[in-house]
Length: 382
Image (cartoon, rainbow, N blue to C red; front, side, top):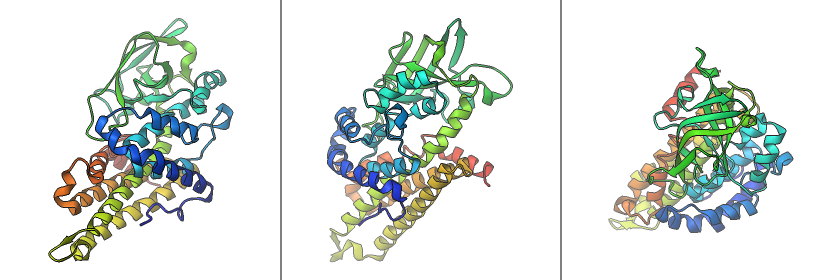
């Protein structure tokens, strides 16, 4: 069965999609179960992805990357997440947030911080969420105060990808207390070896175990004044734009996971007998598989349409929220039906469907929980 065919994929994204599929088959899928069990950070797969030109290459050629488009990055996401969500997220988080520095940062910032990431000598991350605040971007409490030629950071960040592993992060902090809550935040480049920066991994997760998130404590953490990204007070708007692109890619996370669930369920029911006949001959089973295909194809068509809309700057918030919500919930639906079709074997930890079932609970939450996405869909409808 070929679910992630390229007939819906723009011509310019097909070559990189083929490369991603080949890489996923060689490096991600064979290592998926091992890294899920161990919960270790997959440095070897990350390095292989860097060498293959499939990591951090959405960054532009001016800083050493390939300048991959939104559609090309979405094509990679589909293939990687079908092979394994945890490893895939590690690969895609290696440059996460760097795109903000690329668009708004100074030439000096790009050369010092972005080039090593694009040339695969360093990795980075984005620090936004906090222990008590996730989707409310205008409700974060971590502060940055000017002190001469430095910024002093105090507060905590939580669920931060690569908080421990990264060389530096793009960090979101409050810089004002005006009545306009959306203009109180700014973005900063924070080296992880800065004094006052401490990070540890969050407690072990039930899914995405090969991707590591951290808890950051900033205690009188001092960074140079020139590490402010862009203009003070515009951090909220930078993030809102950034997440519109990111949510399309998260839709790709859901599509890859949904494809994995369908493939696993299809193979299982066509290789078993019950009550004297092949399990796939039962109409109820056929209807379950048909419903999974309906959910998947509907989500994929919407996601690729949304990718073009967002790339063209056409009602970006609306289409990004539609794509993220639809695809990640299709993954949940497909995984749940896949578990049901596996019967008792669904709960065995060595089953791929059990791993997928755990993993699908995560993308419905990150980059804005789907309840928040529904608010955005309603408010930003064209």
